[in-house]
Length: 251
Image (tube, rainbow, N blue to C red; front, top):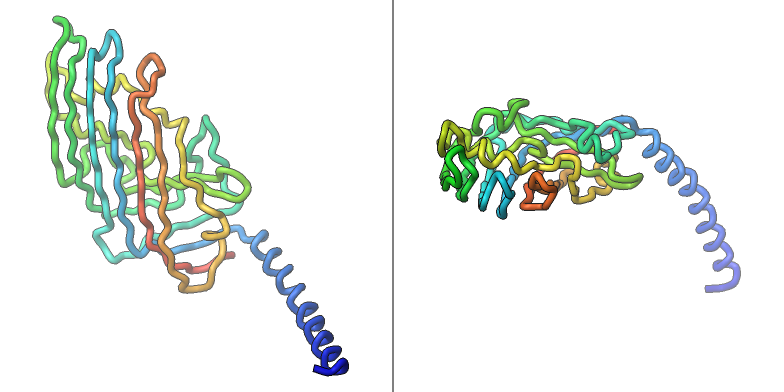
């Protein structure tokens, strides 16, 4: 390459860079001005698992419980996942300030067992429950579907969860143990701390913009601790979901 042709090439590169710089700036400006991003949930599935064990003096001499709930969409009908910007921030007193979607017509299956010894009216009383159902127990899905909730973790990441607050221990609502009490009554002294959720971070840029028809699978997860009346951690509830998405538009 001669000195002349090299000079021509450098001039062309500089011209291209000058053209691209405003475009890049406009793209950044447009991303910052977006107030809503819309996605279709073409299909979705998830699980919620509860594991707890230990003791709670004066209430439960010993206990152990495990529950697994599985859900999936049962219709080809599209559900909308709508992000509004800026999103509300997740705080310790408001762990999921915004609802992004409710996935209705979901098939829910639950299986679980619990056992231990609680302090009944006549002293230490053993209990045992085993349940298996192909539909959600009353109170498990108060909104009629699987909620997708969450908010901002920080300036660059979101936290999202499915089935965050529903208590899977309602599975033992009809398990009679003693003295008119149910398995749910006995275990409910151990509190799911909804004010201390731990979310798997999601980069905001991944869901804020895209080209029409873009497809992706979004994995969301949130963990909530279970605490005894004394404040000791005795278990956790983990909710995980897979959302298959198609980008619609951003405004």
